[in-house]
Image (cartoon, rainbow, N blue to C red; front, side, top):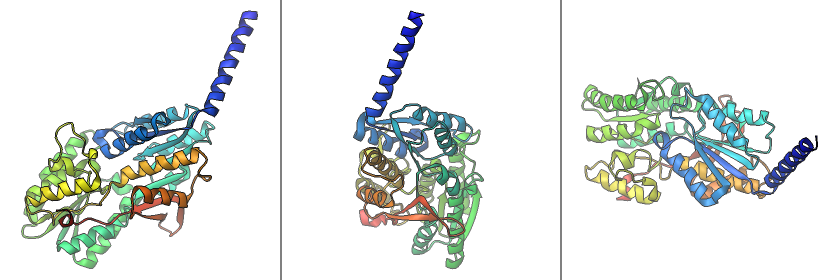
Length: 380
């Protein structure tokens, strides 16, 4: 009996010490991103946050085939919350399974954890109920910015590549609707073409091969016209840029789906060697490299993007905000003024707005970020 009591007392002491340690230890941030193959920008941004804050940041990745393995995403989010020192979790891109993972955390009684979702792939009204803060590049406003660019270029046709899974997402649909409205007003023909979903059984390679084969077909179909190409998927950006560049002077590329100097361009234009990361360069340096490469084929007037990687900024801003919240420098889970101030430090010139749903109702914790498209002629 004495031996059993001794073991119990020892366990109580160990548990008490662990609890005290958890209370006294600096709170940690956990960051979940895609792999390098799915989204290098987010992966590297998580690495940068860890480099900045050291052991206060832990990272992991969700599966490449996240649609079929949502339970894995949920379990990884739960695993973060099993560490009592984790006081904030950031998921970017917030793929399907994020909302369920956040719900599980609350069910665990971890109301002390700040939950941040970047680039959500679940509807705004759904993810905003589970997260404390949601951030996204303004998909809808791109329907204006893309068309303004195409009008400036004198484009006749816009090819819009997507697939049913993406076209069921509220913000992507909002952008498409605005593209259609502006296309009609400007006399630009909008053509929807269905590409293979990269998360389907055939994978990313099938989607990429489809793009490489379809762009030349489109250019033949619309011979003599200026044709612009846009796709809603990250994994298709590199082959689309490659195909548009090869198609010649009548093919145009207004921006990647997640506008950034680093999204596709470094690989499609051969700006980095094998094993090298483009993210060692600043945004301005990469823009200059892209402009110089495009100038070799007189193509700088056929391509555009945004001047900085918004998705990386979402993780950087999220981490800075989380640290300030954990350390008591921010009192509220959703402090719009503090978030805007941190964002402008990371990405000067960014426009931050509150999302409004289809009924015009604001979702107070859902923030949209906008930058203006670049003209590569300015970076030669």
